[in-house]
Length: 245
Image 1 (cartoon, rainbow, N blue to C red):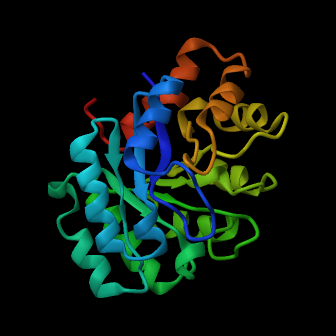
Image 2: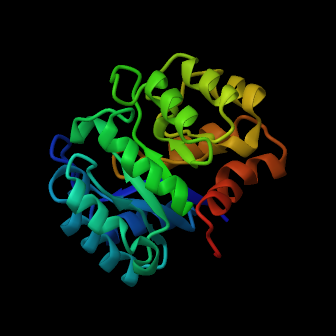
Image 3: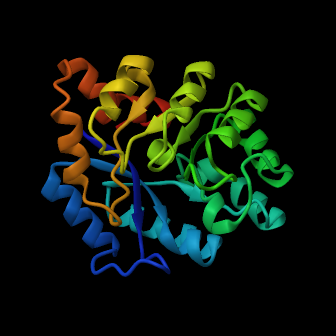
């Protein structure tokens, strides 16, 4: 089984995409042999969280391959907590945060309140990260991990195009996990595995922004033992999100 831990439906406002509808994403997953995708809504990220979340649930009801992640903007506190209140009963498996698009820091009081809720609720959080954005760089991730040691914090892209700081953060904080999409540099994956082990890493593609086949091949050419490869491709996502698939 393969679970893509970082997928989207819908178009991003700054990125023209030919194929971003739910049926398009499912077609891509099937073509690449990916069984499920932990998915958030581009509409929720870029335009309207409640509308995007509702659209995502409709897609998940139609397609078993889509596993829905709630998305909220902590700067809109009332709206965010209204969405969070019944997250599990609505069928969401975790939370997606995008500090860059929503223009806040993970270490801000607004985000901290949401993260505290997630820690108490046992709700895994996938956050966008980028080393050039101080709102979601390695330092911000370290601050959150220290404040919320029981929070399951999954770092999307493992800090996009970053140096090794995010791996150092994960070494210090066992509640930090790294999702690997868009990390193709030679030697980076092998170094990360050597330092963290395979039980802290998740395969993700960022589909439809990127093609899953590239990241799948990057993991497979690492020559890992079958059990280690399965951790990255499936088992860790299933465990962290509490999936019964």
